[in-house]
Image 1 (cartoon, rainbow, N blue to C red):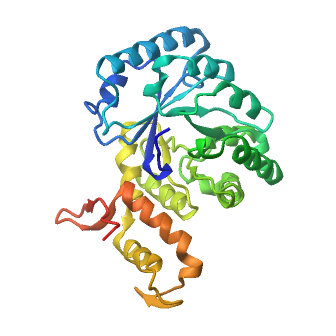
Image 2 (spheres, rainbow, N blue to C red):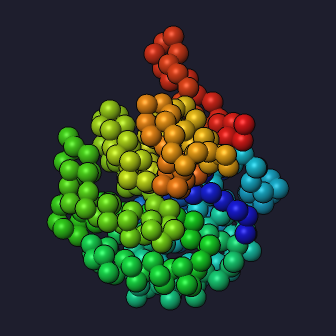
Image 3 (cartoon, helix red, strand yellow):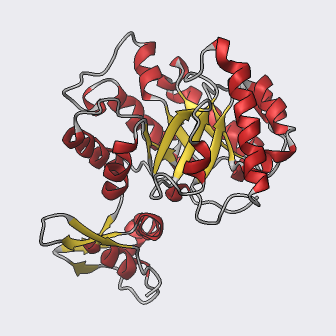
Length: 316
């Protein structure tokens, strides 16, 4: 299993496995700025189209093999099986080596053993999606987190928060004029980042389904970041750059993080009009440096008023 940072996910684009342009996306001929991609065989595929979707996925993997595998610059690639039975079948495909892992839909403590048994290939990462009613129960999430750590360990790349399904559990749909943080999901996200984050899991943010509200999307991503979420699901290419630009680290935060992790840092010091305390802020600083490594740093505004960016030189 190659080592992958959850901060490398960025904006994760979901699309049906029936799409005909997947090869172009994987080889950078379309959306070259894409960081991660999920080919969905579950909610995005009608039951009548499952066989066709599986055939197209297999044909795609053959094409990848014929090209000598995915390039190093290719986006991270995941498949979302319909259920554990389908995952077990995909797990046995020799060409599944060209996929980084599976997104697990609707994972619960009860369904975990079937997924653990189904995905026996040690080279496949798993990204369980938290999207069932028991997510609202903190004790259930404590148990699930403990079981994930005990049974799957480092194979869990990140936990995905399924906002739409969690809202659906309550018979709700988000107001298109507000962020998801003005719904009961504010509680769920805050609780999950505490319960699961404290156990060492990275979490990614729910999808933003309003395609005509880029400013509201930016506002929501800022709240995602303030809750410690490492990436966000995208359902349309127009959302990708918005999400990834927002995930960039400010130069002020980068400089603070470098000072905090310095072995010679004082116990308490002032920087950028704020008090820094390495004993308290060290974990934050490590996350900032990791995010900067993968998502880059916001430097300044250009003459056109657009943000100028570069990848972080975190080791300097």
